[in-house]
Amino acid sequence: MIRRFVRKVQASGKLNLAKQNQYRQPKKSKRLRRRSAIKQAELRQEKEHLRKIGKLEERGSRSKTKS
Image 1: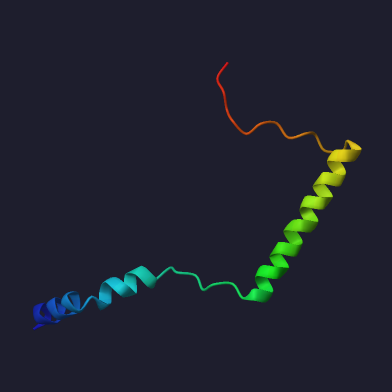
Image 2 (image 1 turned 180 degrees about the vertical axis):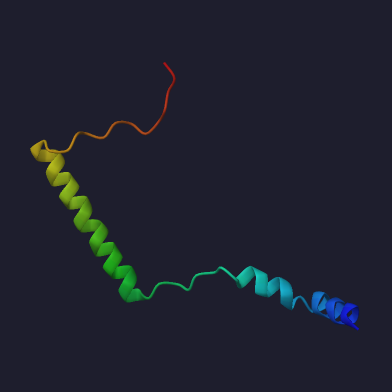
């Protein structure tokens, strides 16, 4: 009886769909996306300001080369 149930569940594909959606995060709302974009822009401006006045060292290249 249990085997029949397991076979039917596997055949229907519901179990696979449930596993795929188990850890999926809902999309952020438009308001939250705007808020995070504004915050990122403010942080970028603050870093640029600190870099210009010399309180933050210049960024180096991101590529790692062996010498």
